[in-house]
Image 1 (spheres, one colour):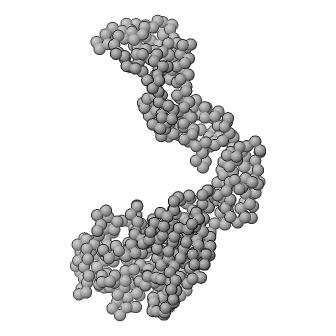
Image 2: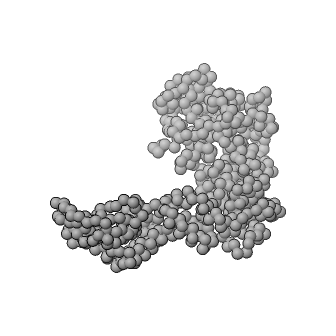
Image 3: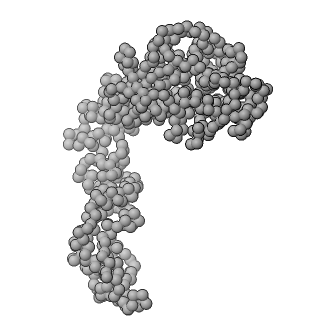
Length: 565
C-alpha cells in the first residue's frame, strides 16, 4: 500500500530543520512594507513569511502541469523528459540519462540521471520501483483536504520562524528595528533638527511628559505619511537624541526632557547602593531571621524569596531607614512592587497622595533599582525620623499611591542621636518628641546631615564590614549600662554611614565570637575575641568561646534556604 504524501510545508521537519529565511522571503516582506507603509512587529512579518511559503508551494503544485510531471519513484522516465521535484522546492529537472539498477531490498528498478535547474552538477534518482515508497501517490498533494491552516502552522512552528526571520532582518541594512517594530529604512520619514527642537519646546512649555500623538499635534510631517509611520519616525529620532528620555505616565509611554528628570531618578543615589549585598545562605538564628522580616530591607531580597513585610496585597508597611530618609526615597520591596499591575518602564512618574490633607506629591518609581523618589520635602515637613513606620497603599487612580503615617500626640523621650565628630560617628542620648509611630530599636535622630555626609562610605571605599561594626558597636554600647546593643539598632546605625542590608550585618554577629546574644534582641561585644570566627553552624549556635553566663543559645539557619524553619 502506497504511503500518502504530505506537502513539505505541512511537516515539522520543514519548519524546524530545513527552514531559513532567504532573499526571496525578505523581498516579499520588502514589497509588502512598501505597500502597507507602516511599521510591523516580528510576529506579523514572520506570519507573512510562513504564509508566503505555503502559498508558493500551492502555486508550484498548480503549475506543475506546465513545467513537468511530479517525480514519483514508481514511474518510468525517458531522456529529455522534464520532472518537478517537491523535495527541492519544486525545482524542475531534465532527464539526461537512464540506466538499470538493482537492490535486493527493492528488486529491479531504473536509475535516472537528471540536471536540476540552477545546479551545475547532475543527480541520480530511482525510477520504476515496484515496492511502496513515501513519494508514491504524489498527485494527491493537490487534492489533500486535511491540510493544516496557516494559523495552525504558525501556532506550531511560529517560534522558530520568528527566530529565523528576525536573524535575517537584522543582517539586512534595508530593514530597521525600533520599539518592537520593523520598518524599511528608506520609508522612515526624515526627522530634522527642526522637528526635534519643536518637540523640546513643547515639553518644556508644558513641563510634563508628552505622548507621541500629543507631540505630533505640532511636529508636522508630509500629510500623505501614515500616522503610524510618523510616530515610528519621531520616536526613533527622539530615542537617538540625548535631550529626550522615554518614560511612562501611566497607561502609555511618553517623552520627557532628560534635563528635567531629577538627578535622584536619572542616576541611582550612592546612598541606596549596598556596599555589602545579601548572597543567600548566611547563617542567622531564629530571632535575627525574624528581625530581617520586620525590617523588610529591599537589599535582603533574593530571587523570588523576599524579606517578609506586614500588610495586605494593596498595602505595605515600610520602615524608614537613614539612606531613604536622606534621599527622599521609599524602598520598593517585592511586596510593594507587587501592587503594580504592570511595570511600564525602568522609571516612570507617579503621584503620591497624603490621605490626611489630600496633598498631591509628584514622584517617580524606579523598579529596576528598587526605590521610589520624591518624598524628601514631605519627610522634612512632617518631621519623620529614621525608624518611622510608613504605609504605602494603592490609590484609586492609576499610578497613584497613598503614603501616610500613623499620627499621634508628641511625647518626649530619651532616644539615640547620631553626630559626626573627629571624623567618626558618635552617639548620645537626647530628649526628642515625634508625632508618628516608630520602631524604637531603629529610631535614631541626627544633628548635622552635612557632617554625616562627610562620613558616608561609598561602595568603592568600604572597609570590611566587620571593621565597621567594631567601630560602631562600642559607641552604641556606651548608651547602655550593661553594654547592650539591639541588633536592629546596630543595623540602623551602620546605615547612617554605609548602605547595607540587615542580613550581612546579622551574619557577622552570628559568626564572630566577639559578639554574643543575651536576649530580647540584644548583643554584647568582647574585644578579646575579635580574632575568633566560628566555622560551623553548631559553634555559631552554641557560642563555644563565650564567657557570658547570660548567653542565649539558639539554633542557626541559612537565610532564604528552602528548608528554613
